[in-house]
Length: 399
Image 1 (tube, rainbow, N blue to C red):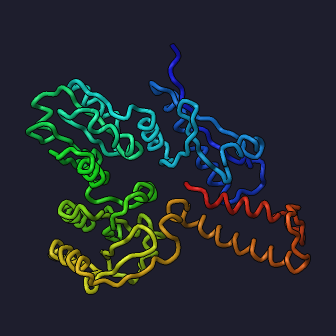
Image 2 (image 1 turned 180 degrees about the vertical axis):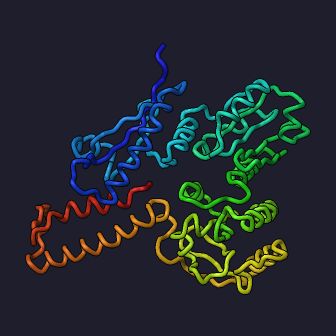
Image 3 (image 1 turned 30 degrees about the vertical axis):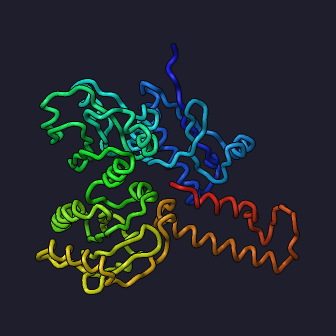
């Protein structure tokens, strides 16, 4: 019997013959390269995933059928049924995501070795929820709902060594595991769906979450406020010390998400919160995940001494409403997810201005024609209105 094969299809505009490469075209080539790197690994899986590429300009009918309106766009075909792919695009993360995408909703583990193999295969990018002495039916609905964000399993048979390793002393129990951060917690119930889902939502992220483009994707469906700490460099000793204290605060405040970001790691993002070279860091704000954030009166900057007390006071002031509401400058949350930041942002701004000038110039030269889609060749320009709109759409596609 032949193995079941799934397909990851890239719709792109194959413009490699162009003498110059725009930012959107360069983005396509980057995605192509990442897929080329991931393709052999995906093809070698127990359930192979074949990577294919389609020239959407050449096969317009196929692109139209799947509602492709910008490039590059990824579609996943499971049992021939298409769905949009919104996961990570770095080669290693893409492989991990797709392995989970085609895996059973809930893995059944019947031995210590099966548990170890499952954890190893799951990798480090997504959390693991493992039920011990828990019936599969209890967790199956939520496993389907959160399949794109976590691994789910139930262990039917295990030794005392496993109980010691995962730090539980009775069953049923649900372990939440973040392998990369070496974090785990145990939930003993109640296991009614409402309480179980609340536990899963609160443990989808590590206690202190590094903010980057991939983690922003994961945050977009969570309605909790984000306590965001902005540091100079995530990797320096002072920042690592702050992160350890943030984890302790997060454990006691599960109704909030605690995140951190370094100016060195993502300067464009931090500038949206009024951070510049004169800003005293670390800086803490509370962000709604979109366009609004809150500065805490008198508690915005964190001093080096007694950090724990300062964070406690920060949270107390926030809950009491001692805040100043502000709006982020520049891009919103959704824009950050889809943008390439830096160079691409500059390209978009310049391009939009150029298109507006072109349209205004055309409008002065000839009256508007309703229902016409003719190309306009004005002043030697090779950019038509239709081409401009299509390229503008391309820049708005998700990364």
